[in-house]
Image (cartoon, rainbow, N blue to C red):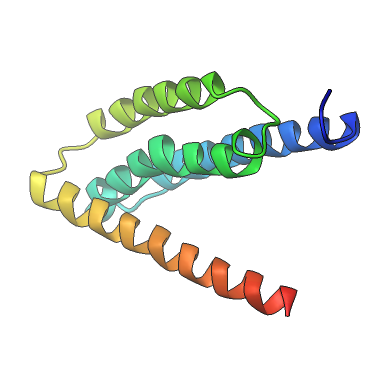
Length: 125
C-alpha cells in the first residue's frame, strides 16, 4: 500500500509528465526562434535540456518519491536523446560551440541547485 493518498500520487505523476513536456516544448521553441548567428549554441543547450534537464525534473518530481517507476526515467532519457540528435542535426555546431554550450548548461543547473537549496532552507526557517 502506498504511503500517499491516490490523489497525491496522481497529481505528482501529472506534474512530472507536464514538467517534462514543458522542458521539451521550451527547447523546441528556443531552437525554432533562435537567431541564425546563435543557432548552434541554442541547439546544444536544447540538446542538454532534452536529455538531462527533463530527466532530472522527472526524477526529482516523481521517480525519487516513488510516484513513478524507474523505467520511466529510461524512457525519458531515450526520447530526450532522440530529440537531442534531431536538434543537433539541424545545425553545424562545432566541437567548441558544443563544449561551451554544455559547460554553460551544467553551470546553470548547478546554480539553480544551489539557489534551490538556499531557498528551501530559508522557507523552512
